[in-house]
Length: 280
Image 1: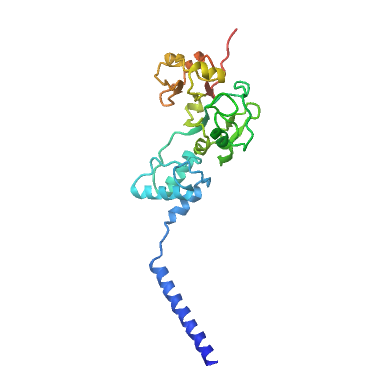
Image 2: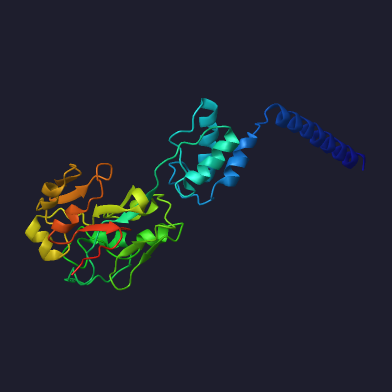
């Protein structure tokens, strides 16, 4: 019985000494979290989309606090919360927020079902990544949208849907935070993050086909054929043809839309412009 009592006492002393040591160590080596981190994270949208370039909202909050300590948070932007969110962050950190131009995801493919005839049938797991790995897909265009919705699956803002009639993704610009998740998910790189533009007006080439003109048009009647008519029409040097496909530089574009009028395949698209009224 004495041996049992002694064992209990010894174990109790060992536990007590260990607790004291752990308590002292926790106090000595404790890492104090900056209270600003929690405050910044509280005003963030909590999307954890990674569009800011950091691992989630906690990573972005940490970058903001470190930036403030270094004297500037310029260049940091919560793509979902936008400038309004950054104003709140700046207030917490005692900084001044720099207004950053808003952006939005743009789909660079206009090859609807009727414009791209089906030439094959894919019988497998319905994801864009899988179909793309098998070849050009069910149509002759090896660059266009595959329509399975990989972009929809990764969008944390429910900003993308697949139009059942056209088979193409559509972006709700009121919901889109330009996080870039859809651009990464698309195996054919047809989704681009572009400037929203003045009054949310945009002009872009809705095609990424690199085939030569006759081949591209044969596979899709809405494809850019690299004819350069838009380049010749643009007075601001905002358009160039590279790899048989036109591209409009959003920084140089003045939204005159003259390129839209001369495009023979109607591959250049616009958004949010007032409808032209033609007098008879």
